[in-house]
Image (cartoon, rainbow, N blue to C red; front, side):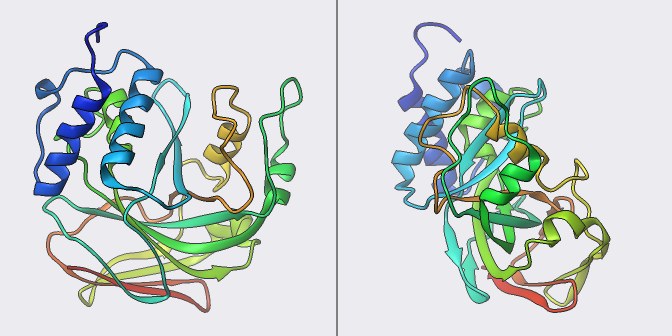
Length: 251
């Protein structure tokens, strides 16, 4: 916003709202002026929350700039995980990928999709939970939403699945129930069509940190089921394809 913008103060406010399960309107915050201020705030929020996982979400801004945010709280389980429920909490089924080797930014020689795919060692069925401390999420200020970890409020990593699903997700049946009620039943559908779209853009982004996309990093790639609001706590049961299943609870 101006030279007086304080990333740590904004991060502390976001953290306090998250801890209380509350939201505030965009107008209640000083706004980051650019991507650098947004990421400084996100990093300060990450420190406030004690985020330790090497797990990330990736998307693009309305202007097409690739961006990431850490996933927290983060659990790796096929069943039994619990994530806190808050009013307005939304759910997404996703495919996550783990890198088997480093993929450093390559100046002057963009990675092909095949090269990005080759650097991935394992694919997984996963679930993201979302609720932002900003009432309008990113509708008014995407940079503030980016600072608030793109609204992430939890992630559950489920079973490994064949890497081939990265290419065939759009023809794969997906069923999700919440508290025994079906909330999605159809073919999986990614907003960009290609599960790797946003990750591919990020791999070729000259602004990404040198520490990004290292071996062992986990990146979730975007929703396959849309964002479904969960009106109350309950068990989530995800069935993907013929055999992959992930069960956890929001409580």
